[in-house]
Amino acid sequence: MRKLNNVRELGLAIRDARRSAGLTQLQLSKQANVSRRWLIAVENGEAKAPDATKIFDTLRALNISFGLGSPEEVPAPRPNQAAADALQIMDQQS
Picture 1 (cartoon, rainbow, N blue to C red):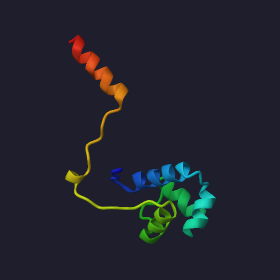
Picture 2 (tube, rainbow, N blue to C red):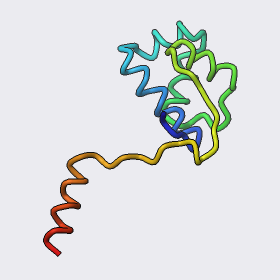
Picture 3 (cartoon, rainbow, N blue to C red):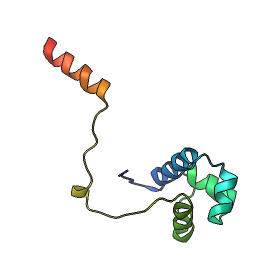
Picture 4 (cartoon, rainbow, N blue to C red):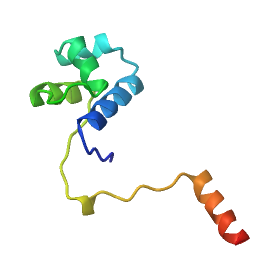
């Protein structure tokens, strides 16, 4: 699960999901019934208070669920393997 802390991160998550789905902004905007201009503003973090209905329509068009939870429920991020290996090597050299 991806943890989002603000509207900008939500926009980036929408953009990543759209790209992963192989959709253009125009295609997604048509599927979600939102304007392309609105979608661009959300993806770029320029929409300061985006309409919740449009957000949910966009997420639904991307087949993404939206959930709420306490911080304790969100798993801690795992470091990537290369970083973990580098840290282990540095520890061994100390």
